[in-house]
Length: 637
Image (tube, rainbow, N blue to C red; front, side, top):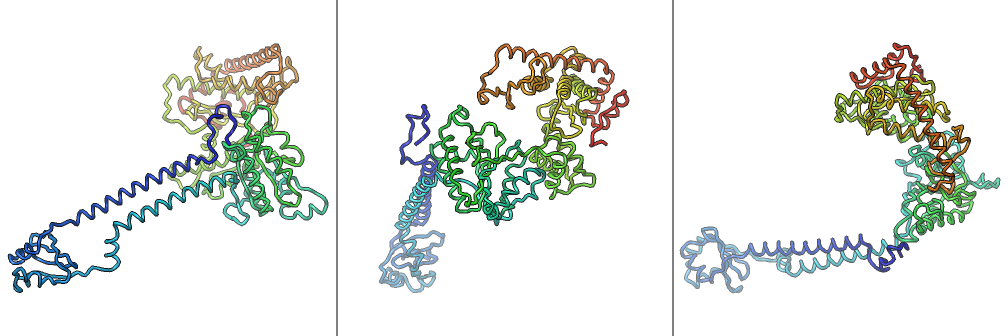
């Protein structure tokens, strides 16, 4: 039975109809078999036809022997094969009971004439003789047998696939698989998460001490965090530490086009895990099937809801002695159904944050174990220059550094390779082929100089580490600024200065050239979005007040994230006015700074046009020469 979609009601397939992939393979094998048959017949006909020789009578052969035209004669039972002087072969026949000398003598061939001919007798027999004789019968029979065997195998495969359609497709990592085994030593950072999960390891290793005091280990652990923070790696590390079977499956693998398949796979997965207990079931991206039911989210998929219901039922059916723990990962916990999060199911939630500076350094050390480094490599500096990077980003950074070194035919990775890799991961590869015209290069230089100048003058912005007008990714140029230290909170003043810094390029183009280009479009989008968040999410507007009108995903928080606004048009008008006011004040602030430091702007822009990029040390020296004290970060102190 297929999904009850209105458009598909009249397209239901019969219950016994073969799946399309089986039909395709059946047809392909049939065509291949027919082609093989034709090829066999062609080869046989060719070989058989090539052996056809001219037939002559015994009298003609006798005359040829008398005239000395025959070089050799081979007698095969009742057949005579004569090779003439001109190397042609002719066939004649005789009675099997008569010898060749007797037959030719009867036609007047003398013994002297016969002695000049090489005569041999070939007595046919054995396996090869009978194989050649019976080949016209054996080959067709053999072909039919092989063809029937292939067809039977395909039908059997179709039947087996139909029976295994509802079986789980979870990947199993056995406890004794040392190649895929991961432990907490292989996971850097996440100290709090590892401490929380160590209880699960202890339970799987020694459940008796928990049961003796009446403790019941949580059935479900939900790992929450941004993409790339190591949720799957942590789950594998728990299984590796505990030495238990690890069943991993993605949420999307439950849902198929047939209704009920997902629920069947859930049942099979839990039954398999119970047989292998102690074990861990890991469901990656569980939000694919665990979204809120009945809210219209996800298209109202009945199959998805049936799968979710089966997961809830299976988790309720666990007994304390089964020693099976369910772990799941998601980066969207806000969309999960409340039934999944209630006590008795995923009642323990472990949040995995982005790594801080010390964690990033530890992660870099793990990813650098097999990489040869030059003497100048300092992973502490790399960790300080990568705030906001996840574990996956750091892995990509180290890999890109190795690729850059190999591309330049060097056997060791230098610090310069890692610094370039940071920019490549953040912004994309350099586009040296994207050549700017002289005018575009000048506009881009003043644009980036405007960003850098405003960021250097304002007190609440981060230090500038690099300015470049070399295209990377979709950006014609970029100004790289990094925080002095990792931040968990941001203030209103920091937001306002960031918006002003984002408008620095816009204002510089307007002042210097008296015109605007499409270059500042992304800056305007980022700044406007930040100003709106200040008003609608963070309560940083005095006119609107401490009200949260939108959720973290940018949509209204009322109505479970639907698009309908729950505030009036009057409030919407006030929000728009506040956003416009913040943007106008930020524009005026940037304009004032650029007008006051116009010579410094020109100096930065000219240096960019000349060198295309300015590193932090050189930029700080330019600021000091113009009377501005540069900001000092931990990396430079």
